Image (spheres, rainbow, N blue to C red):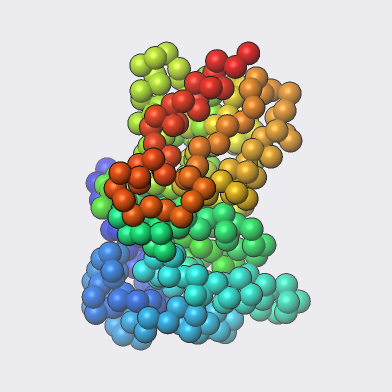
Length: 326
């Protein structure tokens, strides 16, 4: 099987769907002439032309509103944000228009639209460019949210998102656009709402998603050297959640740690801890433990960045804390 980059997998997904359906188009900041801020749309302007690969002004609220209107009228826009940190300006259109339109119109208008772009911290970019927004949007009914952690998932989930008749948010990361992985040559889709067990284990379930799974896998390798075998569940979709896979894993291991990049207050890990204790309480041998970003704006100083984020040591300590609990 061929090995390609995460950005190339996203490019293939969009290009294949645009060839398949003439109503699909891409718009966003620098997606056309510059081939995308992170080169995700490399070559797409040459193939599809300026009517279907559209450079926009730096005006997220404005072009998101145009895209919602286009979706309501039968087109299927893909909106690229340079980063979800900039998309705060578009939140009104995402939350108050795209997410609510089907219900507010009594089913008359659906909004088949994809909003995608880099999410969370990407290095020394300061507090206003380093927020993980999954749990922010996961609070909103009417939205679907996927978080591909590797090239294979990126292509399969994005293709499913483009074909979905509802608004789907695809949370990527600037730090993994260059990651490489196996991607089949042929057509495939990954269903929205289905998690993936990336590592089988018996001693503790780790629930995670997105780029932070790389930290979790490294911690799992180190824990294995100490005789602790964890099961890693890559959620892939955080709205809707694959509760069945989550609960079955916890019933098997009897312990649960949740690792995410977002702040702890009202986060996805809070919801996951609730779901686990609600549906698997009798199987738990220890309380659910969370590993999140520190409850503070993300630091700029390199010396503090590692301390602010979930890291290998914090994940290992969390697993050990539930593994030794009796």
